[in-house]
Length: 302
Image 1 (spheres, helix red, strand yellow):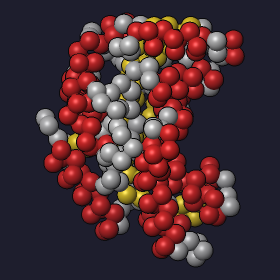
Image 2: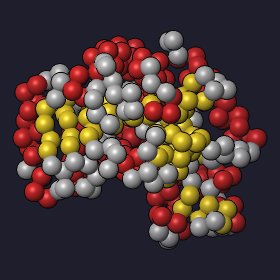
Image 3: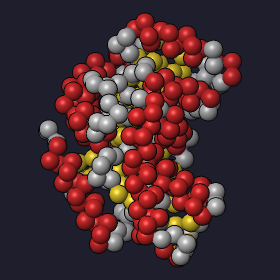
Image 4: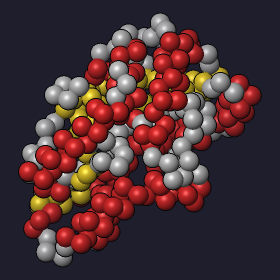
């Protein structure tokens, strides 16, 4: 296995749940957990070590930033400021940019073949900053993006149509935030365009898109933060890297046209992003994509 060691920066609820998910899915042999709160980090590692008997993982331990920099996959969940239930992701930008800058400096020297996955919000801009700060190739650094939003949309369609979620192909694209949008014109159920199903009305489409966008905020109001879904998404990305599955996953990746990171479907393999797929947008979707790109460009600090 080429990618045998994963480092998780941030031992909060998201980071710890990612570690737990990776262990239960039997994806990795060694996990390094890093957090500025050393006592909490040690506590999480002790708790997670009880899972070793149920997993192929051989070890999990507390690590320094420099040790984390040697990992094959580095997952960054740490924040400079925690998102409040009604706070937009973009409001976290200034403080979390400082946190990401500090983290990347402390990771040096970074394994030149490492793949960095950004989970911290606002994920699109922080993925861009990490590409610049790390010096790694752009295909090696990307964000979790709208994968979870897309999965939420697929689930809503599956429930509406009474089919398995795996039979639905549909993406939320653009910013992982308020300007995200569903690419309805390319949505399908087992190859059949969604537009061929008269039982799905325009009102249904609007409701499902809004629900996918707002679900994170709703979870935040209920329990403070989302972490189970996010952890499962990150584990899916890691699995595609570790086993070179070349799955098509909507992640926050570099868009040369706009000089920004935003979510597009990308082929994920052992080298990270192997190819970004161009979705055939209709005119309305193209406008929404450009609106999302312009919004991110307006917020860009570098």
